[in-house]
Length: 134
Image (tube, rainbow, N blue to C red; front, side):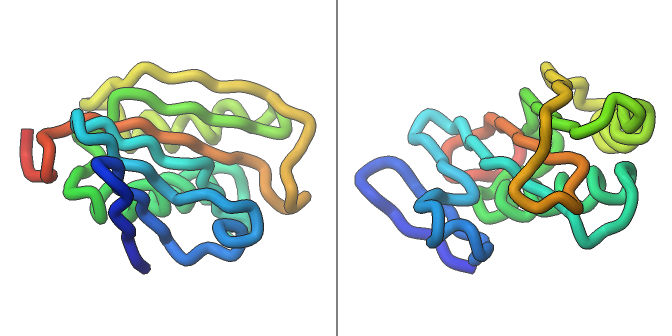
């Protein structure tokens, strides 16, 4: 895993296979303390609940590189391929964020690049510049 500084914006890489192919960063940390984490998945984790937990763990790893944690999350977005998975994805989200209570959006979409993916998550976090506890 590596990170790269470009002017005042820090770009964080997880080394994921699509980052180079599609030309994106796992996360981008802005000088004001906002961290935007790209869509994260967990297709190898099993069902909707497990994929959600795995996807958020990928996002949390990116936040950790920015010096932040789940308690700094202010917004989540969850994309699902099936409405039948709302309860399982919601249960995972609730377990992770019940005390944090970020703004959140949940959408049903047609599909993902890999058909074994049933959920993808995005995270936005805000914390002190340079990381650390709020």
